[in-house]
Length: 240
Image 1 (cartoon, rainbow, N blue to C red):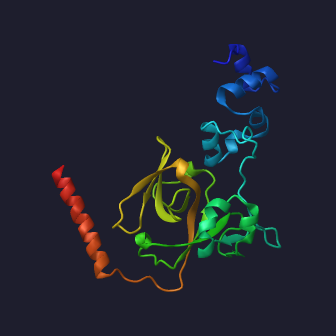
Image 2 (cartoon, one colour):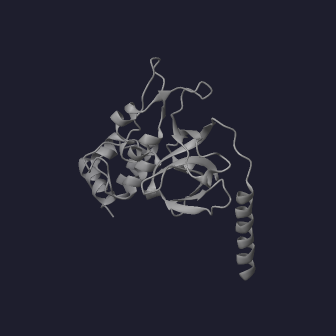
Image 3 (cartoon, rainbow, N blue to C red):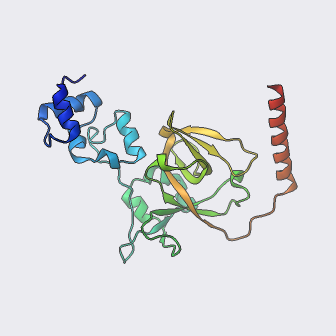
């Protein structure tokens, strides 16, 4: 495809050739739409899913004149990472400011002693009744997931989506075949649904739940919704 002799390609793949010829680098760059800067400067095996997805789509970050995205962090006086808190009033701006170091620096910060110091954590407010029995005024702390493919099926996560949807707290399953995610609500009234990788901005794996009141016991209305949902599933199965 790129006009390399077999012996040249074998030397490159085996590492015998430490400094590929400039012309060969240009051939790789043009064929796979990856800039020479990326080939020389970036360890592609260490990139997270977001960066790999950009490369696969032909959107090489160096070709676009931008850098490989780095998650903005803030540090405490002991040089450990803070756990930033995203208040309700900052929710709307988070989807546009989550890569902006100045926006992240403006968020409230705190540390959670019971969490390992080497992790990257962020706390988000919960909303909606799809999280029941977790109440709407709860706050969820998640650990940043760099490689989405490492998630196990039904991992509880905070998903930050780039559409009109809010932050969602779901049981997440990765569908590697078509690069999508199945999102399952804790509340059984809500059906699972699928989002594509292109719709996902960030994933934070559940670590802590913060409550200022005890969760309510299921109400009669909630139980009735669940029964109707289960009955509908039985009827649909019977029709099939």
